[in-house]
Length: 627
Image (cartoon, rainbow, N blue to C red; front, side):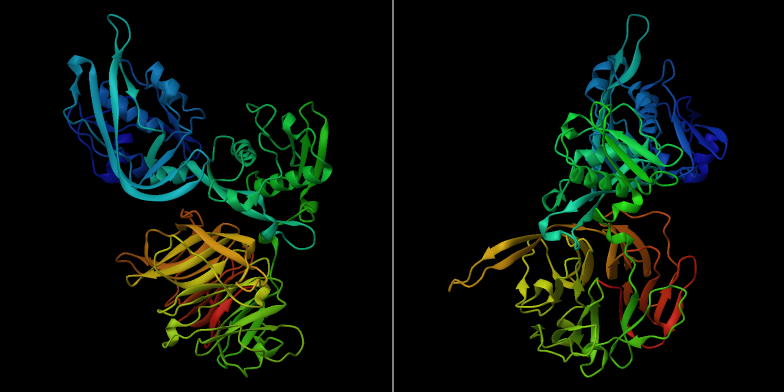
């Protein structure tokens, strides 16, 4: 059966089936997985990633090396064991020498290749001198580091595997004495074995939420989804934020806080209550700090347990209770933006006014102009943004030259423009603006002579030019995350537009002017990461949660498509969206309960959950949710 599956995957192999291999378990059955292997010469790709059975419901169990296995079988068996659901990689270590097993660190890194690694025996060594070397090659697409952080990394992959004969007289076996660093596997196996989860940390003082509760920031990582994911995630949360996010977030767990018994599995009881005993570093935590720690755990674990975690109890190292926090009270401790549901969706109608319609996906109410000057049509608009509290809005004039702000409550007059662009061509002027969770406003001036990313404190006052080192190209579009610490940018270079995610850092002290004027805050966007590296052209994007975006674009030689991506650059598998013709703009809510809204060839349309695209109006543009 194994050979037959392999044949369907990439074409039949020649040679006899290996006795080493994997057991595939799924749908109530166990399948013995075999692969054909030549006795000598070059090996083709280790196609664990090409098995039709590499789906999320399939469990893979590694097999130990058979007695007298040839070097090619040892290499094949080791690489296949890396794709198994073996908690400590115990079976993979059986293919290594004892000394190699001690130093090999599978948790140190995971290298993701487009396909499984190609293995070339070459001419390095031979079986008679007790030494063999194989080259592993492939096209690398990403790496996951020791913090479980995913980073796209397109590169040619090349590593060597060295084997030697070990054992006593009369019985020697081939084993790997120099394995490749960490784990290496194909992309589809990575998607089967690993899952993305969000750890949550608190935004720094500059990103604090309103009402006394601090705002939470999602920090996506990848964990092995069948190896006690809940305990893995708690440990990763206690280890602290990933390096990329560490500068702008804070954990309420003191450095060095760990589980009292790291080898004990954490499991909620039958009422979905979880007890977590910490080491002595947490013994002296106050009730306020303890509840903030518990809130981090509750939001981090909300999607891991089958029925969710309803309550967390934190214990001191001696087993006494530190505090208890329920899910229903967690929002009073920490602001979790993903739980907030906007009241309305907004867009620009055919009269160039800002209009709104109920965000309820089932609503059939007709769009109506917003209150205030931006809903009158006196100043024709081509794009707009609404603050997250839905109290204020910003609009860009029809010619793209001017940015205005106004209240959405009561009558007000249109004040002077907050920003003006001097670009000659309309398409080179101001982008659609964006509000962050603090109530600050962002917009890009696309003037070729002076391209700028601008920030307005609370949407008012003198615009501050944002420093964006390390970004090559002109910013075409801007969307700031609800937490205010990440910004999504569409960047155009050489007639191609790509999606980048930058980290927002603010220095509230700023610098004083020459005349001793009040200091302006210094705002920077640092360490940009390409979030959709395989898309040759990205035409629209929107945040769709704490770490997720919906993106419209096309791959090289492909057609336009919509997909969800993580802000770390990873693609969410199994999240296909119904096709739509000529998508120009897209809007998503932070809450996944709200429908997508788009501007397409069919006008303004929206996509309720589990349904198809529905036309709202035939004429309109610039659909947005608050933000």
